[in-house]
Structures are given as structure tokens and as C-alpha cells.
Amino acid sequence: MADRSVKTDRQHKSKRAQATLEITLAFICLTVLLSGAIYMFIWFTERLAHRQEDYESTRVAAGSIAAGNEGVYINESNYPKLDIFGESH
Image 1 (cartoon, rainbow, N blue to C red):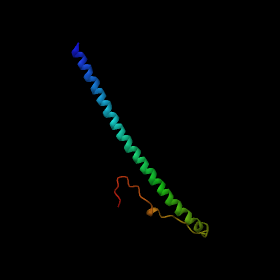
Image 2: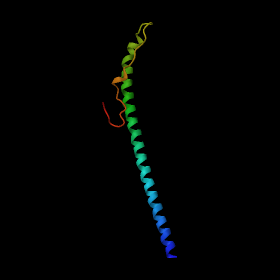
Image 3: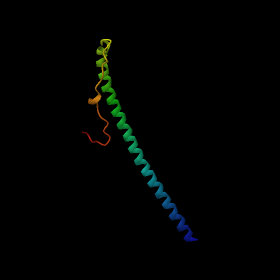
Image 4: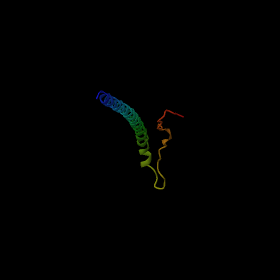
């Protein structure tokens, strides 16, 4: 009878350890996903601000273009790049 009690106690401890490990891994994955989402949100808002500045500065030129002209285009190469792993070039 005591042998059976020891066996169930070991199974209970191993299940608790497995649950702790799973929660820890889930927390790490959630943290990585959340930090990536925050980083992308910051990048998006910075890029949107740069685009809006350039857009507003071209409105007068776009309104005064002759009928045969193609239009005013914004060069987006100067905008912040999405650099997820910190490898700025």
C-alpha cells in the first residue's frame, strides 16, 4: 500500500514539473511575440510620421502641376527601416 502512495506522489510531482515548464515556455514565447509587436508598432508610427511630413510638403507642388505632368512622388528610401534583429546597415 505504501508503495502505491509513493508512485502516485512521484507522478504528481512530475506532472507539476511539466506544467511549470510548459508555463515558463509559454511565457517566454508570449514575451517574444509581445516585444516584437511593440517594436513593429513603434516602427510603423515613426514611418507614418515621416510619410505624413513628406506628403504635406508635396501638396502645393501636386496642386500646381501642369496637366501633362506625371505627379509628385515621395522618396521613401530615407525612412526608418524595419530592423528586427538589430542589424543596422
